[in-house]
Image (cartoon, rainbow, N blue to C red; front, side, top):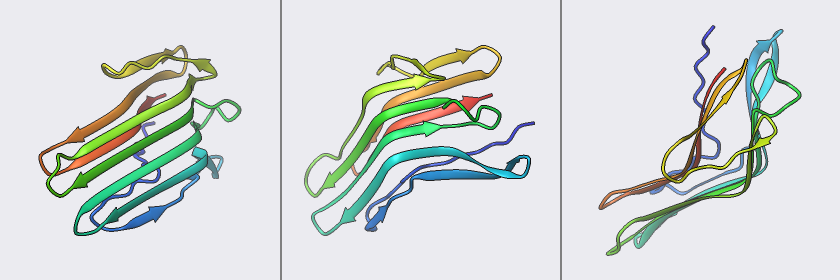
Amino acid sequence: VQVPLKVTLNEVQAPASAEKTALTVNLDGVEGGEPVSILRADVATAEATADEHRAKGYTNLAKARVHVPGLPALSLIEVEKVTSKALCEVGKEPVAESNVLGHVKVLGKKVTLSAGGPTRVAVPGVGEVSLDLSKTETTSRTAAATALQLKVAV
């Protein structure tokens, strides 16, 4: 069975001003009809602001954990802290910055992420986890930052 799930925790976009705090993402009716907490964070904040001089956005996550159905006791992925910022100021080049601070674990095992591209972790009998660290994108007029992008196949 394939259940595609695309989830973004605390995404904000300027030029509209917005603030979000989302600590959990649940998937309903998966394990015996009960909801499963797919993504949980102890701290999750995001804010975007815009005025005539600049547009900026940031997001912070602390103690973020990803769970999948069938593995209830152990986090598939755990990230200690991630931050991302994007800033577009009038007359200046847009800038974007993302950081993963602290440890990253896959099924309880610490992994080292590479800034040069995705880190793939094969978990025998479970599947593959692909972690893309600190993804940023800027153009002459825009900036975007993603602190951590995950692709999970189980």
